[in-house]
Amino acid sequence: MCLLPILPKMPEPRVLILFNEPVLPLDHPDRGSEEDVLYSVKIVGESLNTGGIPFDTFGVTDDLTALLARLTRRDFDVAFNLYEGTADRSVTEVYLTGLLEWLGIAYTGCPSFTLSVARNKPVAKRLFQSAGIPTAEFTEVSTPDVPGWAHFPAIIKPAAEDASVGIEQGSVVTTPDELRAQVQYVLDHYGPPALVERYIHGREIQVSVIDLNGDGRPVVLPFAEIAFKPTEGSRWPIYTYTAKWHEESDEYKHAPVLVGVSLPPAVTAKLNEMALEVYHLLGARDYARIDSRVTPDGEVYILEMNPNPAITSVMIDEGLPAVGGTYDQFIAALVRNAAARIGQSSGSRRVRTERP
Image (cartoon, rainbow, N blue to C red; front, side, top):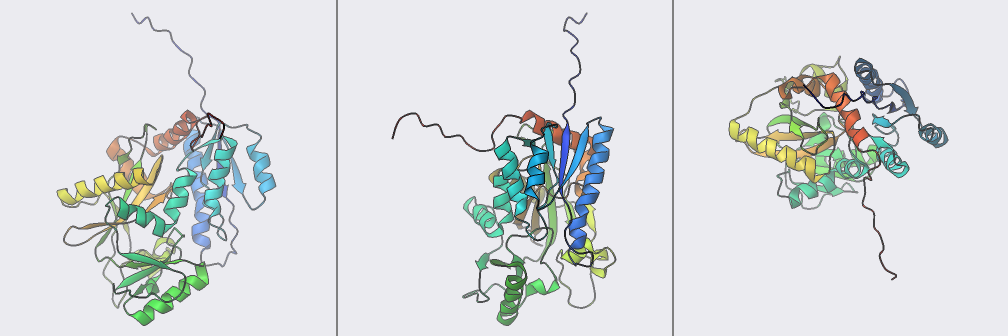
């Protein structure tokens, strides 16, 4: 006979889904990536419904008064953070998490420190270097001149954008003149600094890391590959904005995402280890994606880490069964992880014990 008391089931945490209201004109070339968040809100809401978790939604705009009024109502326990920053000020992605931390609101996903560091690609790459994690040679510049650069081909990226924004076929350059012209283009369109990076020939492997139990021991999902198909002409095998978002384009059709790709055992073990090291190094939480290139001779180079990557990604959906999970369980786990953090601080508290 069981002598343990039968405890009543605890109510599920109440959730407020936060997301960015699209602001770009309908004909803007980046509108597609911005609108993707609306699909994420729909899918997450359906999963919360399936799990019996009550929720509401709030679209964040530049109206801070409305945002503060909604947050201070406190008729929710956990904020489900789908906010990606406004398209015209993407850095606000960091500001929102800082505000939630200031207000003591528990939320899903990576903390403000991680978002701030990971979105600054040159800073993140310096941290990789300091930890002995292989990454492509790089420099950051605020003028079109790149003195002493000798690594060609090279790829030029905005230093603080994600979702492939600013990445196009012209991003890869093979001569100093092309380098200066592309750096100038990035500076003009996205502002300084620009990241100049040695282009790595090889397979583009993306690694999703998730923490289903909130215990700081995340697991690696099966690898995914951007499986670039051979094309006529001189197209580079890179995951451009067009290849990622414009489904009708030829680039999109020639860059399918395959989940569960195999690599040699030694390379698999190396990439698993490096992905977890990057996750912890940048202070990730709940879920993140590490992007890498694997050369034909098995060398692994970490390109960057994406905190709070697309939550509706096929990489997560198709990878979860390998670790005994489902998508609905994943969404519920993020909520419960955040609920367990209620009252915890994301930063350190300094207590003065004596007079100066």
